[in-house]
Length: 252
Image (cartoon, helix red, strand yellow):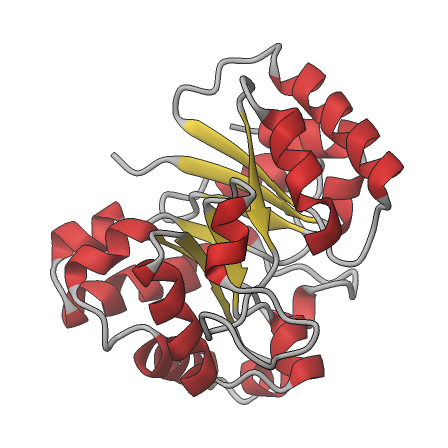
C-alpha cells in the first residue's frame, strides 16, 4: 500500500534561527497524531539542511533538499551534488519544480540526468511536473504531462519507481490564489496513474505516490486528499506556518 506524504517546500525562506524554530514547532505538532500511513517531509534551504537533519533525528519528521546538480563534482560554482546531500543525512531530493524550470531553464532532458544521478546515489526523488495556464486553456494538459513524464522518467525501469514520488503541479495554481478543483486534481492524478500503467504495469502504477502541488491550504486539504488517486501534497507557502502545515498533515 502506498503511503500518504505531506511535504513542505520552504523555497528561499527561513534563516538558521527560523529553521530551528519551525522544525521544533512541527515536531511538537506531529507528535500528537498517529502517522502510520503518512510521511511528513520539509525541504529547507541548502545552508540549513545539516542543522535540519540533526534536529529532526529521533522524530517523525524527514528532511529533503530542494534541488541538486547532476554531476558528481567539478567546476560548478554554487551547485550541490547528490553525494554532498547524502553526507549531511539527506535521503530525499525535490527535482523539476516549476520554479526551477521557469527561472533556471531546467528542461526535461536535464532533469532526466538529475534523476539518474539521484537514483544512482540511492536518493529518493520527488519529481515535479505540470502544465502552464495556456496549456490548460487549450485543453492540452494531459499531452503536456505525458510528454514531461516520457522525457524525464520513462527511460527508467519499473523498479526505479519504488524510489520516485510524483508531484503534479498545475503551474497556474501555484502562488496565484487559484486552485484546481478536487475533481480536476483527481482527473489528472488518475490520468497519470493510467499513463504509468500503460508504460509499465498496473502494480507499478498503483504503488507510486502522487502528490498534488497547487496551493493546498487547511480549508481545502481534506477534500483534495479525499480523492482516491491523490496521495498527499507538496506544500509551498502554507508549510511556513506551523499551524497551517499541521492542519494539512492532519487532514488525513
